[in-house]
Each structure stands twice: as C-alpha cells, then as structure tokens.
Length: 116
Image 1 (cartoon, one colour):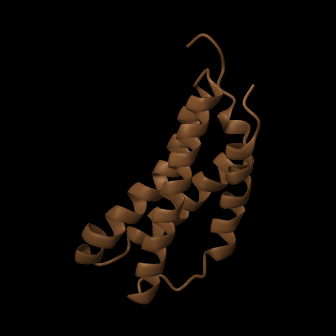
Image 2 (tube, rainbow, N blue to C red):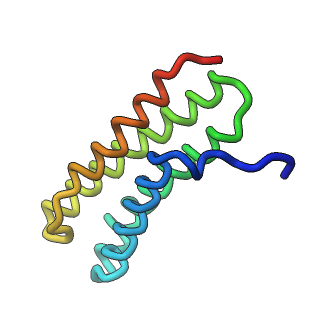
C-alpha cells in the first residue's frame, strides 16, 4: 500500500469496532440456535459498520466516501434492530442505546461533511 490509512484515527471507527467486539463476546456465549439466527445477523451488521467506515477512508471522491458512510449508517441501524431483538428475547440485558448514539452522531457528521 502506498499511503498509510487514516480511518483508524477516527473515534467513530474505534467506537464501532469496540461495540462489535463487545457484541461478539456476548453472542459467543449464546445457545447455538440463538447464535445461528439472531447472533450471526447481529455480528455481521455490527462488523459492517466499521468495515464500511474503513473502506470509505480509501476512496478518492467525496461522493464515493459518502456512499460507503451511508451504508455504514444503514448497518448501524440494522445492528440496532438486532440488539433490540436480542434484548426482547432475553439474550442481551445491557442497554446499548448510548453506545449506538455515540457512533450515530459522529457518523452522521461525516456523512454531512462538505465534499472536497
């Protein structure tokens, strides 16, 4: 790779990775059926948030970066759905709304940034 990546310095990237790791640790302890249904979807959505932020960091045009950040936001909303589902089924006891908001706010800020 020719130039170093800068996405790792973004707090929103770090927070989204931390949330995905927290969820992964919790889902790994769920019964097999719940892991294979809700858990797999939840982990895929949570991992997708930081992956799309990282991919956006490697794009040249503002429009292309924004498109991937919007995908990351969609994945965050999907993760929120699966967190709510897991919570309603007694699989997650922790309220993660503040963690989701701590990702959503700066992610929306990146999306709204003027394109260079």
